Length: 164
Ligand code: BGC
Ligand code: CA
Image (cartoon, rainbow, N blue to C red):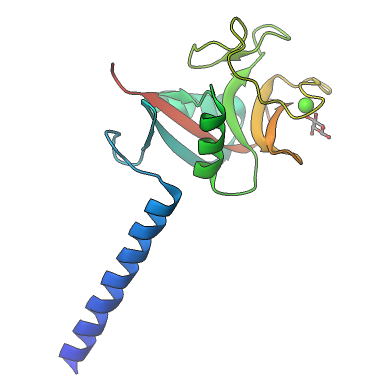
């Protein structure tokens, strides 16, 4: 009986870990050279933060982990972050015009305003409706960027740059 229970346990454990591995492979997420808890993509490490926070608290949390809210510089980054978020709710990214209305800056210091390297606004955005200085994505019908009030509570994604 004990042997049967043990072998059943082993079979269940092995099968469930195989499922986990195959799910990981299916969505293509891996730790790579990143610290534990981070997922590697194109020279950076990313972590989804499920706890809902204001934009500033989300940024401060990312800074405490050694990074910033994630910036997006390609369609590939954009789709990857949505995949990592893995739910339908919007999440904060590092874009804001808190310093100067209409001047969009990434909190990690990368360029949005000078080169306009990548933009993914929903149609009609940014509209600064009321006063909206912070950007979340995965919002609205198109699931792209929307400027919204910085005190809204959303999930977020942090990014770390690996030392070059
Ligand atoms: C608008 C967004 C706005 C949001 C604020 C939506 O209806 O389309 O631009 O940020 O309301 O909650
Ligand atoms: Ca808006």
